[in-house]
Length: 329
Length: 240
Image (tube, rainbow over all chains, first blue to last red; front, side):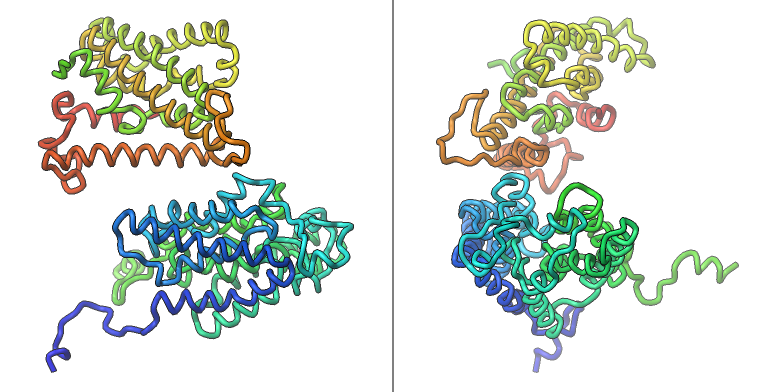
């Protein structure tokens, strides 16, 4: 009986959703994309994924043991980070690169800032950018030895990513982009597999549509306008190619929606998504680089506290000062 | 070792450890981050700054009664700029490679906030001998800090130290460390190590710096040479 009289501060209504369940759901949602990567790129891709996950979990465990903090490897967040790092690797990458990336992502980006929920930028993307700057030749070498893609007739444009082709204003076969029969990182190859995972996450309400839709929508509109102005052949087809190529699907559905590094308010999430779209458009279409999703997302991760500051909702019953003055005067 | 206030050894130790300009006062960030791409550059920058700092500290200390209070900043800049010009020509003549590598950062020593800071906080108030040793200490502290950052960045980012390859052939250099982000990373790690050392030392004397902050001077390691003024002046007035 006395339990019913316990006094506690809000929140009083609690859900039974735990970090573990959310991270488990994200892992399940990433399975199709991982499978697609392994099928298209062969066994080495699987080894890269496993090595990334194991090194992420190990570095979290070792760091928390050394600093005598509670060990949080059971909440699966390190597994998700490791898998995302693995999915961001080229298929034939030397194995020390994902290991180094996992150690950097988990220890520097996540643990040094206070562990899960305290990281100011997505650990997987922080690691990806760290590796991209450090090992630019290994990280952009998308040649494949085994797997499906290696066997199909793509020798003529071997290891040129669709984005590099699109950069010149030439469209790419949309069917291959959608299914995944293209060169690229392990995770970004199949837009279809990523969308299956995203629909699963939407269905169980782990993510909502605001960030991905405003992100992809803004990007789509801007690319469409630019391709019409620049006079590319078939601007609609070209725009769809840009949307399904590269890391946009992986970034928009699985990385931009990371709880710790995206705004909490509805308005903030839409501002965040629109800014992501604009930045990705600028990186891909205006600057010299072919890919810009990861830089756009970590840039907006850093702006998230500011967006939240400006879009903070008013508490119930409080009137904004301006309105109050109007009413009084 | 005589460690009482304003004695030569105390000043030098103060510059190297107690108030290390880079790791404790976080001054002079522009040259620190930009010129530490290799150990050689770091040494060149550190030593030229030390020479200018010592000389300008001496000159300002000697002229402190002549310089009117209102005109002190322009006067300091004139004095510092003269020494910078001398050092610049000397480096161009005798160490042309380092001069070329450091480029614009040699003329920029004129507005280096360590030199301005020491002129404001120390040389403009104290005698010439103390000021020389203050400049020397601060300069050596700056050089050591730059050398540490530069060596780590060069070792990890290029696999060399002073241009000599020291890593085995299979080592793949982590390029980011010789680029701008690496400077911030290495710098942050050194500041963290320094804070760890200092907070540990302070805790052993029974004071918890994380609770009281610097507003409370009672347990502060600097209270002997600060008299409650130095840190505030250095932190607010001169930033380059």
